[in-house]
Length: 541
Ligand code: NA7
Image (cartoon, helix red, strand yellow):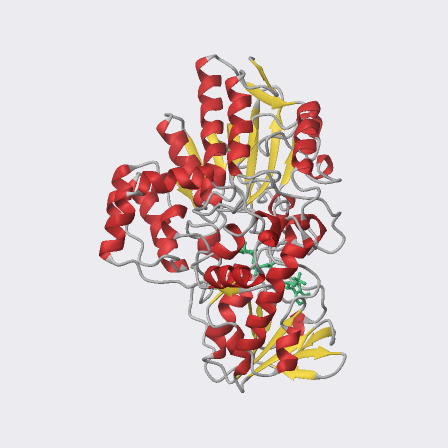
């Protein structure tokens, strides 16, 4: 008999729940559902766990949040045994931590690697999702939880010719597991967001020459990182519950809270001294523990950007280069400010050139480098630090179909529609953690309440013999109105940033996150749950 050319469909693996995404939120969700006694698996596209901390393994990648506020808080034993080596730990340490957690809590066998989900289709009769991966595996699950990450769909410039380039190229968000050698090479970096600002000093010290292609400068402030001594580690451990409580009161889920005083009421000298203290303080203090009016009032913001412009001028020797590094299109905090370590001094080196793509347009990549409308840059290696199709980009990569075969992409055509950032109408039993219209900031603290609610909701359904949970369009409308009310009138609203999808050509400008802060978000979620899952509709088969 001739061999059949038809592929035998894979026999679906049946599960109670499936988590998609093996980053910090997905791992926590897996832990909680396993604890609940569910037959659960986690699918991860990478060949290791870690999410952002797996994919972004470029040199210089590190936390912007304090290490000890980023980790998990669900186990006293874990808190006892894990000590972070630095206030802002580097990527390798975070990846080790997440692997440690997976092993420590017996989750390794529940994680299926190199399983990129391509489609998820809801079966209305069975109240189950059919999930298919690029590897051809098929899963049937009652509950589907997506923990895809808000910055996980890498974005490349829409410039032709990359396939002709004969050198090496890498995206910071797809960095290889093997060492990239910059020694003696002519390198180009495109992009000066958080990733570019972290990797550029590392490359500059090693390469023969570096051309940094900057589209828009950012307001970068020093990270002021330091090692955590054993004494400091003991102190942190003794205060860890207090630290956790502080994260719950902070809008960003961090150690920081904005000051209520007005900066404009201050004497200019006093205000300057205050900004100087923040500049020399660690991490995102400048962004998150500043006067509240800096985020709301143009003149308050201008006082700060004047201060920061002077800092840039004092650190960059060539006045013309310094001026190019000063942002003109946005104030401080309107876009996520990168943290830096020696970034501005890079431009004092003889082997570094700053190319402003506002003045000099990139026309194409060539076999030997980058052609602008002014000249050709001969390079051996190109680094794309060009960011991500944020928040919804990772959902766009999966064909998600709900009731009646409706596509999630169509439901979200005019911008994401969710209730509490956790469910979309017409997509029952599908939960999102760290999805659109939910808080960002310190991600594990932001997604923790969502994971806890998903877990509680599933437990509630199992206890009561319920097979389906969904939300209404009215609940979505209410949430969207609430989301918009948190961003309207802020200075953030007027800047072009990935939080509005502005970095993706052709994408409708709509706010993708939740600006109301973590305490308010937690309150909203708690209110919904305590009032009997208001906004959710349950049914039993
Ligand atoms: P970001 O912050 O989105 O930065 C991407 C950078 O790449 C930014 O400077 C962009 O300029 C630049 N970019 C994008 N497209 C181009 C083209 N076509 N040409 C030149 N430059 C370009 O991503 P990161 O990875 O740095 O950081 C992501 C988040 O990680 C960050 O917000 C923190 O939360 C941690 P633009 O400003 O769009 O003009």
